[in-house]
Image (cartoon, rainbow, N blue to C red; front, side, top):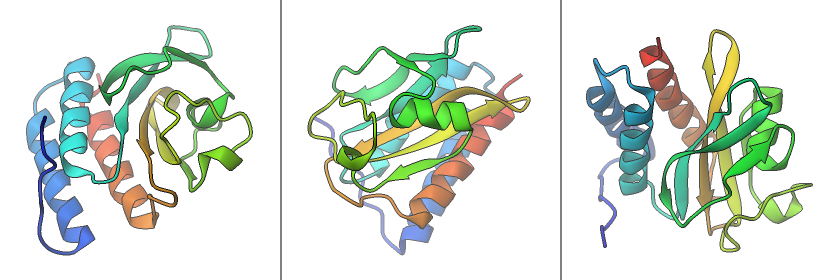
Length: 162
């Protein structure tokens, strides 16, 4: 089993290091699946107190997300837009940072151990093409700093999309 990487410095300094690593890892690569897979793996190594990290991708012309590259236990395969945290993020094109998923109306419990979640839409040409989804067994795990830097990482991925 892999152990989480220990970074030193402030949370912002740690995220700056992670962001630079993601940028170097995906630089020059335009295959979306490869970039999402490597980003999921790197986020899993970096982030503490999480139990799932990965991407859901829009399934063609359907308003539905389908499971993409991830690290964690097996997950829900399909999520309709507007359902659960991921579907809400995809439908509204907004970040969803949920301190207690059990209080979120319509939450889809793929892993009963998850207590908080952050979902960031992945955009291309103004449209949602997927979402970054990160779950934690801790309540209130994600804050504004996490959101800011995870959004920056998603933006780096968006820049590689052709």
